[in-house]
Length: 243
Image (cartoon, rainbow, N blue to C red):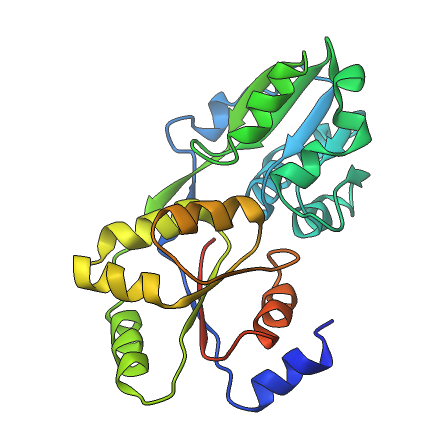
């Protein structure tokens, strides 16, 4: 639920404009008929998209494993079928890896399957291997770039031209943010860095900060209500980057 201040912000002119620069597609290099369910003890599903694909293709095989997710949104896709452990406060890779059931003493020598996409949440398999787990990464989808949306550039130009207007970007994916910057000209990248950034985790905040963003606010999580709550104390006219 949004805070009263966040609801007031929306009512007083705050506008959110979702914008995806990455789309998701099933991993077509491995056709569905060639998929092999790995041997594992613990399963980690890294995103709602991955959860939906796993449920759609492997629903009958989900039982009998301990399942984990980095956030409540991903867990919600699975919970009608199986029990899932997921962090509540820090809904990100770090929060997942802080769960007691994924510490060294719990995963040492265990087989863990991480259902994800290439380049997604690489911290999870790396840390689990460091803790002694035997990790298999199962790529169930891949990210593809989406052509730039001219409306986004027009919106930024409008914000810069309006006296007193303050622009904010919501960032829920470091990969999407990098993809967005790659689509922009150098002046547009500088303009992007000049906007305020509301990020869904400390890790993403570190990424956008390293790319030039000066004003960064960390939200409690990636949900729209979390982002609005963080923005309520910072400004208006937010856009959203990430998927």
